[in-house]
Image (cartoon, rainbow, N blue to C red):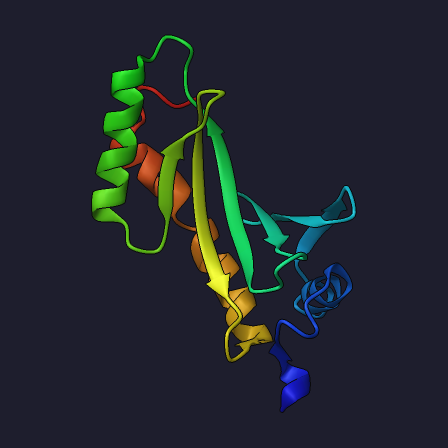
Length: 137
């Protein structure tokens, strides 16, 4: 049973690669520490290799240069009010950033990780269409 869990003790990029290979996911390893998964949208999978307490999922979209900071903030506020699984924010570089953290306390099953990535990947495009279609590229 312990072999089926991702825990702080066994968290590594190699473990995540093996899980994604077994699930036939389309992915690549970026800079040796993050995995880029191609699904409904590109999802970055970033294990916290220092604290070993979580795996962060994130996706990045670009705002149109013509959009105002006020419009961008209104967009992320509407997304955050409606969507539970994701957190949306505007980065310092003016990008739309979606994220979700999977905590490893007590362990996370491999199936739960794959399911979470697929669920996460299904959200950003719909959120953008609904709340930012006119300001997101």
